Structures are given as structure tokens and as C-alpha cells.
Length: 382
Ligand SMILES: [Zn+2]
Image (cartoon, rainbow, N blue to C red; front, top):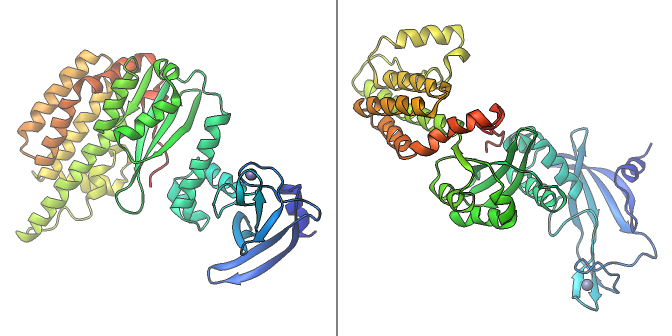
């Protein structure tokens, strides 16, 4: 069977045919190149208005990445025509396998976007030898498609998350539906400003925004501001994973600093290679790690005291009543403020500032499924 036959089964075009498929060698490995040409007698269509138009000239050959097979990259190779459209002027022709100026076929973008639901974007990029940005753009395409084609009825809970681009200090804002029956990425926007999230609500519409019952975010101020303004009726909860991540970050800071101090003072390096001991949950430790941890606990180190504070804070989540949870939190914060451990004090101050939102978690807990209040622990960790 020829590859052409397979291509005609999986991706057939009315006005274009596969001329040839060949295997070529490149620095990054083999490639299958499927050459396309217009079917004879078929007129080129204007990419703007999609109406047939007389030809104008030809552009240089372009390559569009298609879904890989057997670990081999696949490309469509085509020389686009330009048309002289009566309404739009000189435009490149419409090519049904691609959207806009992308170098990826729509089929390939869907392929990446589907994998991105199961793996982190970074993992998808690695698995298919493509860039993080390709994966992000593919997800963006799928989400944009979903926005116009999917039913948005009955969305009660949303979660807002941010991720950092691999390059520089750029962020993306991601909005998920986190209802028990339907968890999906609804919206992607560049940056993480007030304006970014406002754009989401603008698209989402006032009616749907007012029907929201829960919104889950981290403590990023612009998000808090926008939620308070656009969905003030919703119970706003802070994502548990993000809060624990703040504490873990503080512990990490304490440990790194203390390890440096001990080294300069010439003490035995008890803290080296202890990073994961202090960040992991005790139930996830191996036996060896567990014995190292209990050994460490003998030392009255700031890292260890921070670790114990974190473990104590875990009890917070087990409370049922917002009142008692609040009492517990206040006590924990007082104790932490007295610890004289600066990074931990910073966390305590932050928790105090967000006391009301933090306690909303317990209000929501009674009403929402645990899947929702436990946070939306996405796999998008860039
Ligand atoms: Zn046109």
C-alpha cells in the first residue's frame, strides 16, 4: 500500500491531490514529504472571502508539518498561488490544511492539543520534537475553536491559573471550567494583568459570569480584583496547591540559605541533598529518606522548624467549619510570626491578608464536590 493511499484516507482534499510522497534525510532525522498540487481544473480560492478568483502569481514552496508516523516527521510541501480577488485584492489562496500563517497543519495542531490534555506542554514538545510554543499555539487554536463550537451552558465553577513562558518573563492566563462533570480549558490569554482576565469575562458574557457559583484562583492580585468585580456573587476560593506551593518555596529559601551558612561556618553538611525530604509529604518518602528526615529533626535548624510549621499547616485543610479553621489559622500565623524565620513570616502575612478568601474554601467544601475544591491541579507545568 502506498502512503498516498493512506493520506487520501486520513486527509483528503477536494481541490488538491497528493502528487508524491518521499522520504528525505535532514540534520534532525528523516522526514516524509508529501507534495501537494491543485487538482486540474480547480480554481484557487481567495483566503479572505473563500470565493474562486483568477490566479495572480506563485509563491515559493512552503512546508507545513503534519501528524508524525513511526517517529518520522511528516510535512506537506506545497507552492501556494496568489489570486487577484475582485473584492479583496491580491491575496494568497485558501489552503484547507492550514489556518493563517501557521507552519503546522490544522490536523497536527489538533494532534498536539489532544496530547496536551494528557501531558504537560513541555512533555508534549519533547515527545514530538517540537517547541513549547508550537504546543501552546496548538492548544490556543483548539481552545479558540472550542469557544465558538462548544456549549457553554451551565458552567458553575471556573479556575484561573497562570503559567510562565519558557523564555523571559512572559505569562499566560488560563481559565478552566472545573465543574465535576466537565473539566476543560476554556480560554487562554497572554500576560496576567487585570486587562487579561477582563478580556476573558468580556468574551464569557455578563449573564454567564453572573451564573458562576465558584471561582478558584491563586493569590495574584489582578485576578482577585477582576473576580471581585465581574463575579462578585461567586464564592471565591484560593487554590490549595498554590498556597502549599508558597510554603514550599519559603522552606526552599530557608534551607538554601541555611545550608550556605552552615558551610561557611564549617559545620558538617547535614542539609545537603535534603531538599526533597523537606518538600515531599511524609507519606511519600522512601524508607531511606524517612530515616534521614528523623535524623535531621534532631537539629534545631530553621529549615526543620519551617518544615514542622508546614506539616502543622496541613491540618488546616481538614477542618469542616470556617470558624474553627480561622482560629487554627490565626494561631498558626502568630506562631510563625514569632519564629523569626523571614520567608515563613512572609507566608504568614500573606495568609493573613487573604483570610476571608482562604476561609471561603471551607464554605465551598460543604457545597462543592471535592474534585473542585481540591484545586484544579492541571498538568500544564511549563
Ligand atoms: Zn476575496
